[in-house]
Length: 374
Image (cartoon, rainbow, N blue to C red; front, side):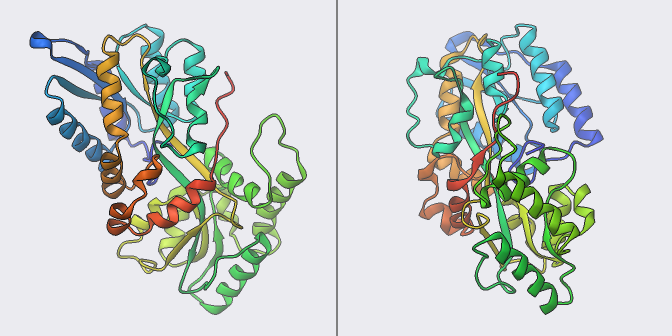
């Protein structure tokens, strides 16, 4: 996920960037206040519905914990600039932000630098999280970050055109070609992210998983991965189920092609369900791992600054955000799939039935490996 969100990663705009710089300059410091009250600073990148969901969660947390105030420090919505802004504070040894939202590729490298608090000190119970979501938060056998919410990338398909999802990559090709012949409005059999950014990696991981491969930087040149690359190449150049334009498409363009009714299949994230409201595809979307096993798990984690002066309060806030009711509410309000298995429950499914499909994709999704500095 190139930017911070499971519903789609938010794009950096001039206004958002200016706002992030202004907030970065103003900062905001946590501190002990009179009467035993504490203020903690939460660094995150939520804009739009994600930002509102975070503010709603903070309001509820503060009502339940009147001695703790949470201030949001909004950093850039672009993941690369977010990391740079965060590192500037950590390198300077600042005690704030106290709580940090971190992409799955960050925790190990940040922990190696001594910038993250060792959460093992709290003896955390991690048994309730999706198993695959836990690995990115660990370094040298210790937990430095816990999953907040996840993104699950898999195969979206038009249920009005395709009765059963394809069981193999070859069946996907056949079904895509058949859909293009069946409905003249279908311009593309398959849409996926092919632009030169991390979206190309996550879509490749979906293809690779379908062939039994995986994204392992130490062992990329495997027969399974070669098959996955050949499949993506052939989709554009041989069987023509995908347009050449996908080589420049990111999540947004893929979503537009699909929800507008121009694509029969797409590789994308669950935000497409919410984005389909009022479109020709509303209520006509299926979501599965490609060939039953091809899926990518994007993970947004919560960590604590190693220099914080409010570790206990910070941990209490993280525990609240990772409670089942809080995760269900965020999933409904912001479209961010829960990281807790128990949050995929009757309450969530009643409010947003598509999460039944999201859960199945998330359960088999492969997480991206940690950053290269680990």
